[in-house]
Length: 256
Image (tube, rainbow, N blue to C red; front, side, top):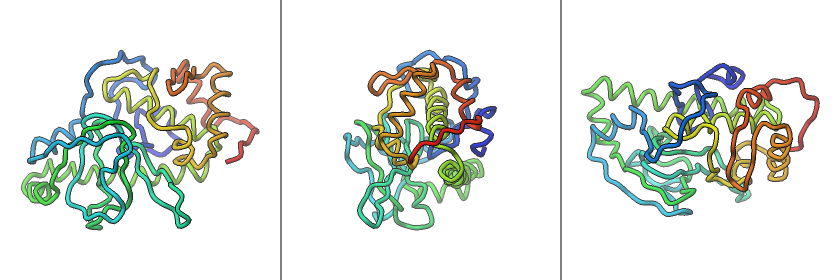
């Protein structure tokens, strides 16, 4: 599940949840109108008295230090996870899509360890953790799903550390696009054409790259025929070639 094995693996390791993709990662998936939630979220929603909540673009779902009471399943829309550095700068630590669960990092801390901000008008379901925890003690399958989510969060942190510590700039961006493609496909949307809900600056923040570097590499990928870019719309022309960027012997180095 680590990033060096990204090319042959159907696992998407860069999101806040690891997503298993049943179809081949390079298969074109027709766009659909509905979001398909993974079984884990279905299990959580079916077991508890979850309530719906709408979050407008730019609004906070929760903030750093807020008391932890619930997990949040994303029914529609998308979010970013944010930490503030000591000098007040925003550091993006992840992006979340429909079907994923937010707030797992609050388990055991009793407070949220960062901010969650809506990237677009979104809808979540709030899952009371006290109720969920009590049910999990009586239901081994539900308890296993909670453990899986915690494991996924640990794997995500490890993958992100590896990404930032050992990959060149173009490898980071290629891995990000591949991951996003896999996560879109897992939700029943096109794996080859999608709209970026996050800005290039936000992508750079998560990948440890400057805005100019992100823009330059996207232009390079387009020039090489790997992708097509139109504003925030990305069309992956060759997923195989994009995968080949990771680990290729390229002596060019980008400034971060």
